[in-house]
Image 1 (cartoon, rainbow over the protein chains, first blue to last red):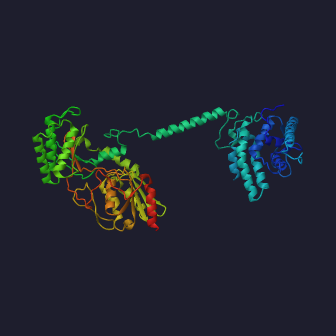
Image 2: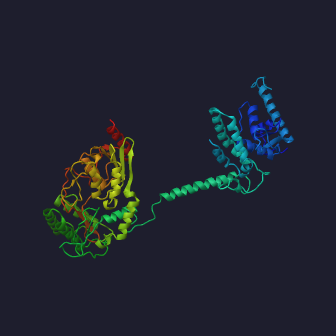
Image 3: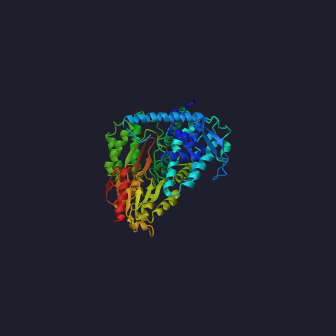
Length: 116
Length: 480
């Protein structure tokens, strides 16, 4: 698995991978999706967002897909991004790592049982 | 924050990044701007952008952009200069460290160079004086050819510190003596100097009776052998000074010995080029008017670092005085003022009075002088403060002393330098000279002046704190 630069996986990169799990999105869509899935705590700025995207593309975890227009912004041609299979694997590995941590936290009674 | 700021921020990113994502980054910003309305959300957006600049930049530079097209980046923004990156790689930490080091070295080197004195040498300054001082010093020695009926045509004299311009003296044409720097004085040389001192006194000193008495005393002492054991020049000068002072009771008389040859009249005359240079220098230095401004509370503040020649600087000084003409109090900062022309001192002081006052000028050519006020000066009844330091000298001390004696100013700071004023300087021969007053000057204030002791301030504070103290005092007087 190509995991040089993104090991450990930065939080922003992991969030982007997660946001693309269901559907292909463009940059702004990713930003909104990340905001949603973190309850508004993480709003990726343009620099962070596109730098992370570039990093993920370079590592082959996501890929660009050209799609012409959508209803709101028909004049613009935006890049959409799709999760690759290796991206999905990396996301799963990261999720499992976090789940392990979670188990530890719960065993140490730092976290109660109401989450996951 | 406008989109333009963001566009500038984007320019900090690698060229390949900009090429690929610039439009989309801007679009993202526009989208958020469109969707997030209300002041709080707008502010949040701006905060996000600032934060993003910090977190996003390192990320962007870490990427390799391998699959990005490597077209030249100049086409990126037309007309706006930007760095072209030949190799699409982030800067290595070593390069950044070297760059920082070189910047610091260059900055330190520049600082050191700026501290060096001017590499300029002016004739006769011997390197000890700054260029301005050298030229001033040179010009202040006004010389005219000997007119006396004394003992020969080749005499010479000059005034020290630029006082009266008509000066004459006689010196015996004996001074072909070999440099006596190391050699002890011969009997003949010693007698010649003693005789020259006596003759100069009787010919020039304002009180002929006392001069004659001193002359007789010197002759008597010489005959008694009082000087027989004096073999070096400085001791002789000191002894002669003591003797003529005790004979006349005038403590401004002085005989000096100089190891280096004292220049004769022909060589002390400033050339036209030097005069021109001096004028240009004065104008370039704004006639040594360092500051002329109004401080809070309508307090005028003038920092004069000399009292320069009126013929060159009259207009500049007048302008400076006018700039504080409507102030409620005036502070004269003379802490770095080393003196200048007595005429200028009087000219600057004149607007501070509305009636004629006795004016002490130890270098005047007539016995008693007065200062006539300017018509309708608004400053005549305004409080005046003078800032003094141990660097305040000569003409600046005259200004300080006179205004203090006239109770016209409050002097704040340190005791002034106590520059001497010996009157007119006469060259006796290559190594001896003497200073004496040719006009009897009455001190109208009846108190000892600053010669050798300086002017005591009314308020003693460190010179560095004088301005603050003056501002406080002036502020209280202006708005009680």
